[in-house]
Length: 72
Image (tube, rainbow, N blue to C red):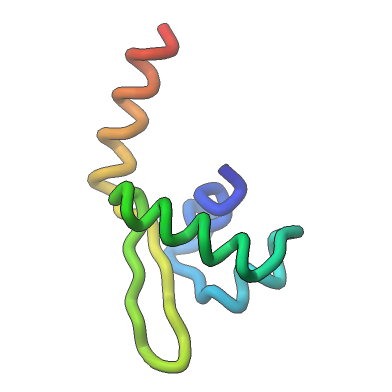
């Protein structure tokens, strides 16, 4: 959730910047970013040597609608 909150507060964020902001290991951050990307909730723009991540706004809206229905 913290990753999504960070990305939602900014338009996009680089992996290294997120690693400085969040209190988790870089390897853990990478794993969570990959899971969020595989789920379609975020997208990554790889520009070596950095990767910039953004929330996939369309998929995030759908996910929020589904979660709201489940939690009602």
